Length: 585
Image (cartoon, rainbow, N blue to C red):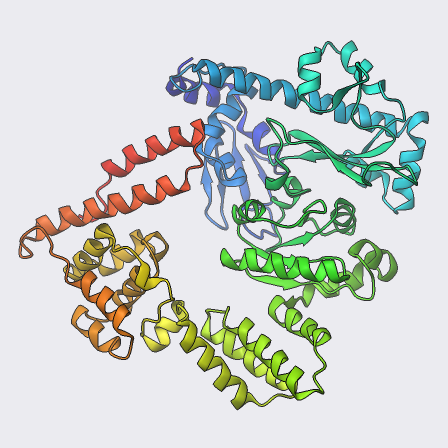
C-alpha cells in the first residue's frame, strides 16, 4: 500500500483508544474515555479520547489531535515515524519510493529480527531468574533490597553459569547462527558457539519505543576475570554513547527534572523509591549524544553522582556539557553516603525527597569543592582560590545569575565583594563575553567573543538584518517567525536583539562606540551591505524577506539532519514545505 493511502487506512483499522491506552490509563465515561493528561501536570482527568471521531482532546491544556499527532507529541517523533510505527500494528506494508529501497528494506528487516531476538532473550533471562538455576541472581537482587515488583518493572534477569544454555534455547526457537552471532549475545569459543553472558545478573536496555536493544550485566563471580559490569557491544540497534538507562521510563515522567546518576542500580533504587525521572549513564562519562536525548524533552537536570573524587569530576564535566545546551543543572548532595543506593537505604525515602526539594545549584556546589584544593589561610593560595572562583563566574552569561552568585560567594566565604566584583569585571572585559537576553535588555550593548573578528560575513543574515529594519510594522510577526538561535552566529544574534529592543539602525553605531575597532568594522560591513532592489518598493522588500527567511530555515533544517536516509527523506519534505511557505504577507 502506498504511504499516502495507508494514512487513512491505519486510522480506520486501529482503535485510537487502544493505542493511547498503551501510554495513558483511560477509563470509560459515557461515549468517551478519560484519563490524566500526559502533556501537562494534570491532577483531575481532563484528557478525553473519542473513538467514533478518532480524536483526543485535553480540556485543561488544550492539546488535541488524532492518533498520529498523539504519538508525535508524546514520543517526540516525526509524522512519518508515527505512520510507520502504527502500520506495523495494523499489519499494513507500506510501499513508497523510500521504504521500497532494497537496502533500506533489508536493514529494516534485520533490525526487526534483532528486536525480536533481544525481546526473547530478555524473557528467557527473566524466567531463569525465578527458577532454581537463577537463585544466585535473585538472592543478589534481594540483598540489594529490590522488590519483586521492581525486578518485574525493569525486566531484570539472570544468565546461568552455563556457556551454551541460552544459545541452545535460541536454536530451539528457530534462530539461525548468522543472526545469533550478529546480535553479539553469542560468540565462538574454541570453535564452539557459546553465550557471551554467563553467571551474571542481566539488565535489559530498553529504548523509548519499548524495544529491548541490549543488556548490561553484572558478574556474581567474587574474583572475576572480566569487568564487574559488561555491556552489549554496539550493534545495528544499540549504541552505548547515545543511550541512557531507564530513559524509556523517565522520558514520560511528569516531573520537571531528570535525575542523572551513574549506575543502573542507582536509577532503579530511585525509581523504586517513587521518583520516576531517574536515568543512568551506565558507569561511563556523560557525553553530548546523551545530552541530546535529554534535550528532546527539555527539563532541569539534577546531578546525583557518587561522592568520591570521580563523582565530583563527573558532576563538573556533565555540567559543562549541559550548560552548552542551556539546561539548568543542580546537584543532589548525598554525603555522607558513597552513592544514592546507600543513601536511600540508610536514610530513607523522605530524606531523599527533601534533597530533591532543595537541590544545590551546580555552580555553588563546584565552588564549595574548590576549598579542598587550596590552603586558604595562605595568602598566595587564597589568591589562586579567588581567581578560580572568578574564572568560573565568567562562564555564566546571565548577568543577573552571575551577580547573585557573586554576592552569595562573598558572603559565604567571607570575601570582599568589591574586590571580587573588580576582578570579575576585569576578566569579563578581557574575555569580551557575549551577553544573553537579560544582559542585552539591561545594557543594550554588544559584547562579542574573541572569535568574532574571525567570523565570516553571511550575506543571507546581513540581508535579513537590513530587510527587517525596512518593515517596522511587521516587527512582532518577524520576531515570532525567526528566533535568534536560527541566525548565523553571535554578532547577528546581538544585532537582532537590538532590533527586538527597538534600537534603530542608525542608533546601533552609538551603542557600540566604546567597542574595539574590529567589532565596529564587522558591524559596519553588515549594516552597509548593498541590497539588490529598490528600497521604496514594499512588495519587493516583502518578497526578498520571504526568500531570505526560507534560506535561513533551510540552512537550519540541513544542520539538524544526521545524514541517515530517514533524515534526508524528512529534510527534502521540509525544504519543499519551506519553499511553499509565505512567511510575511
